Amino acid sequence: MMSSDERRETDDLILEPFTAYKTEYESKFRQNCEEYFDGLVGRSGIDPEENRRTVASYRAQNRLIEQISGLLSRYRGLKGLHIFLIVLGAVLLAAGIFLLVRGENLTGAVLLAVGVLFVVLFPVLLAKVILPRLRQNEEKRQKMQAKADEILRKAWEQMAPLNALFEGNVTKKLIHKTVPLLFLDDNFNVRRYDYLNGKYGYGRDDDPETSTVGILTGEIVGNPFVVDRTLVHTLGTYTYTGSIEIFWTTTHTDSEGHLVTEHHSQTLTASVTKPKPYYSERTRLIYGNEAAPDLHFSRRPAHVEDLSEKERERKIKKGTKAIRKKQAETVGGAGAFTEMGNEEFDVLFGALDRDNEVQFRLLFTPLAQKNLLALLTDEEGYGDDFEMTKAGCLNYIRSEHSAKWDMEEDRSRYFSFSLDDSRAKFLDFNGQYFRSLYFDLAPLLSIPLYQQHKPHEYIYRESYPRYFTRQETEYAVNSLGAAAFAHPSAATQSILKTNFLSRDGKSDRVRVTANAYRAVDRVDLVPVFGGDGQMHEVPVNWVEYLPVSNTKVVKMKEIGLSDRDFFAAAESGEYRSAIAKHGGEKYGYRHGILCCIVPEEDTAFDADFTLR
Image 1 (cartoon, rainbow, N blue to C red):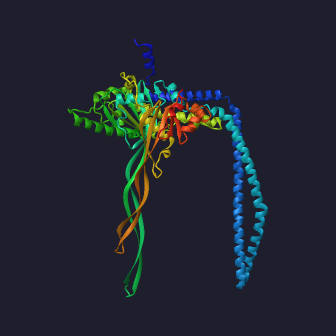
Image 2: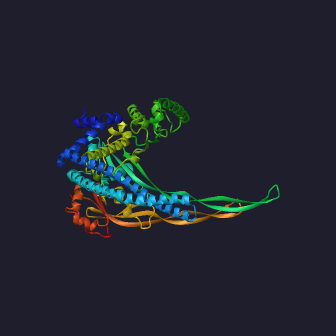
Image 3: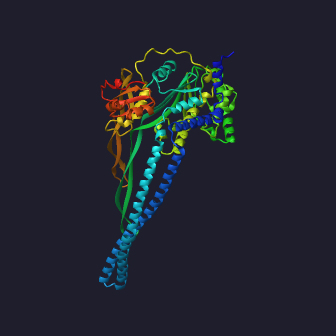
């Protein structure tokens, strides 16, 4: 018989993740978010109805300001029109006098009369009507704006107790509360890295052309995963173009014997292709699991959710023929391919490069096939927008929706003068965060064996030479902003790479190198043959990108406070003097870790920031 713990773990398994999200987790997560937010409101002691009245008053005042601003725009338009008519009157007056002098009496008299009318009437209207009303309405608008600013200040004061309670790591807690199977780390610590690296081979290659700008780690029933977002540098090419206009003449004799000269022109265009750096972001989920350790395969998105039923049937029919042909061609071979018996799954999932049929079937049971087909054909969610690659014990998921996923848990995003707006921001951000993460994990959760398989025990080291992983240090310095590290001449984005220098008590000392390019304007003269029979040099302006780098030192320490409590301590509490001393150039606090740009030698940093 199963123990109570084993039975509870079995009950926690997500056997049908797509159905579970639609019928349970989506609404449960929103309920947890609402309860958490409402709990903060209760703790803050603010009066929701009073704030709503204040906000309504502020917005009503803004509507009045918009109305008077519209009136001011009309008066400014009339002011401009009157000035134009005055100038026109002066021109007509001068023209009338000129024509009278020339003896054109009738026309001159008319223009003179109209000119006199304009230069007399419109200045009076401008001075007596337009400008006074413009001043009056501007004064009224300023008074209204002052009143609106006062109402807004009051609304911010009302919301201050709630804004002070927000924390940046609450999303992870709410996800775990909703789906206990998912556990998310506070940060990517060295023990998690040691486990992923030593057991599964994650992160053994540190690409110098990438820098971590977002990181999230966790586990599913002990099986670890990482979501990393990296800034990727590639060196490509760019084609620059230039042109000149040439002119020439030709002469010939026409049919009547006359000499005819013709003028010609032509635009000569030239181009040059030169190296140019490009930057993009890549978001991927890496999941470690020892099940089917010898299996390799890949699949790419085809957006089958966009196909009609008939289009899908045609795709399956055509794909099945290709699969059977592939099977026939590999019969008897060492890596013989065998169709699954579920044509729809084989075609739509499309992992046709698999190299171990036994282990593939071990993973993709009928239930797993059903789950994945539900994901792929879903028209309401993300559908078939993900890549999936399995390379031994590591699984990689890349999706189109995760590229747009806002990964930053920043408490300030919830700040508002309006309780209702703050609540909407809170529910929207957390709902989108959970949805994006869940559906990146969904292809893995769709495989029951992955959830049922517990990893073998791993022997951790007794101590580690550093406190923070390379990924976490890159994330920390990127959060400070690449501009804080960039070379003064850098004209492109900077790839920030970190190099661990030493441990100082409970802190890490890290060197940051910012690699970028400076831009130098160049001109190439490209010879082009023109229609005049001559060779011309066409100038093409281009930019040469020359590498530059800059280095600075940071120190990092895990303080053990929420971001709310840390910034309170940094602004007016016990860390105020330490921040002024060590964080004067730049500092940040993410994932519970303080990161400061410091002088090359800063021996007092660790002692000045005590752990909680």
